[in-house]
Image (tube, rainbow, N blue to C red):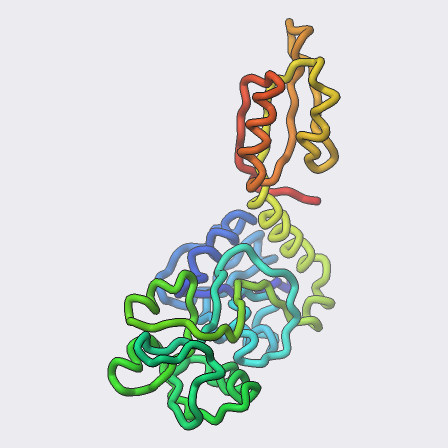
Length: 288
């Protein structure tokens, strides 16, 4: 039997979210710390490989994995030829240019030629400064980039940030954005075609989890005379479902799916038309 192998990060900022995603689609991947692991599921139809996030684009390109989850930043940095299948709803961050707060530099364009830039992303950093027409020296580091200016290793850094809090703690200021990044599901186009049915099972399952994460299932009892307003309030996937309530002629039960970011407003509107017994529940999977 030919398995479909999915590579996910074994550590770092994407690890826990990737494991949770695998668990939600039925692959109970154990948390092994930093160790590499190859686990089988569905009687060997699928395998999950835990590996270094930076190695996953190469694994997918070379065919060691059919699918992979890694950061857009690492895909762009390595330049590996992989197919981007879908963005995922975690791992959002930015690759930024940052300078010491007291440097007087306000924009990346103001950085002088000849300065040293510490980075774990030499290819993206070089391309960015080349586009700006700047000649800089690169100091490649494997981590703790934010301390490079403090110890005299570099004048400027490029680093990933989510909120900017680590930069502020190290008295650095963001002056440019190289790349907006997030977790991405990638694949090997040749292998995906060869194993099309099984690959589609996995990608459809992942898509259903991503769709569900932004939705909520809503139930309420609504006065019958308010039904004409209901479709406007609750468009849902194909409109709300309306059901009778045993022993009640004046109320009906409605079930609907609504966007999470619109939920508070929908509840307020439902209450305004006399709805009662409003329940909100998460959705595990949603196939569109």
